[in-house]
Amino acid sequence: MTIFTKIVNGEIPCNKVLENDEFLAFHDINPKAPIHILIIPKKEYKCFQEVDSQIMCKMTDFIKEVATHLGLDKTGYRLITNNGENGGQEVMHLHFHLLGGAKLKWDHQSDSNSKEFF
Ligand code: AMP
Image (cartoon, rainbow, N blue to C red; front, side, top):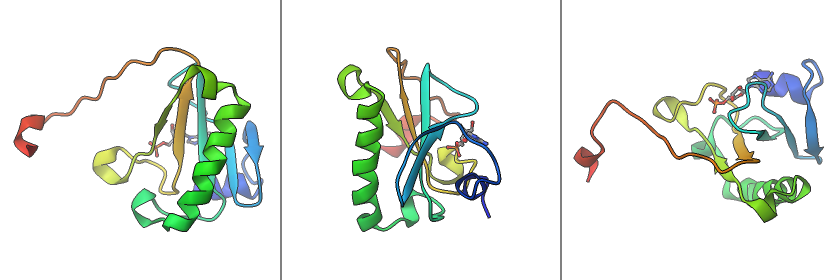
């Protein structure tokens, strides 16, 4: 069971933003922006690569609902999912990071030279 399933089950508290039968949005415990929300399906999917497109269809609507609820639809936001080891995923329960509340920097660093991939 993932830590996020424990949050869904109420075994671990969270600072909830919105939920419905299938999805939950709550504040990240270690925010990287003035507004940093995690959006998860209540059912465990390991990562983006393993989730069905039908679930993602509904999740897309929920993510937009959360963004609108927080006024981020007007000011703009960043939506990120870290997928697997190289993506930096730490919690193996699909989640999207919704970041906003300020003009965000774009700073992705890696040890390798990106040109070797092109
Ligand atoms: P990732 O690296 O994409 O797997 O992101 C995991 C995120 O979960 C990190 O940003 C953590 O700060 C966040 N996190 C871990 N435990 C909790 C928790 N109990 N409540 C809220 N956010 C959490």
